[in-house]
Length: 98
Image (cartoon, rainbow, N blue to C red; front, side, top):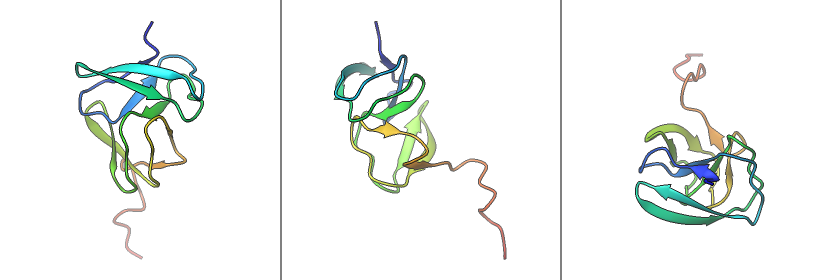
């Protein structure tokens, strides 16, 4: 049974298909490349974890598209969520003149 899914070969995150535990090894298929990841955090069902290093300020990519920007360095196997990613969509604070 697959434990996580990589949607597109460009993605730097995988999505958990079940609750996953810290220190668990997960194997994902990233565009035909098998990647083994040891999780650094518990990953709830439906949440993301990094399959590649993501530097602070770098884009988080899912579906082959940018879904946000890292607000801190993210290590392979680390939970990727609101604590370390900012959304780039629907930002009402951008372009606001004071």
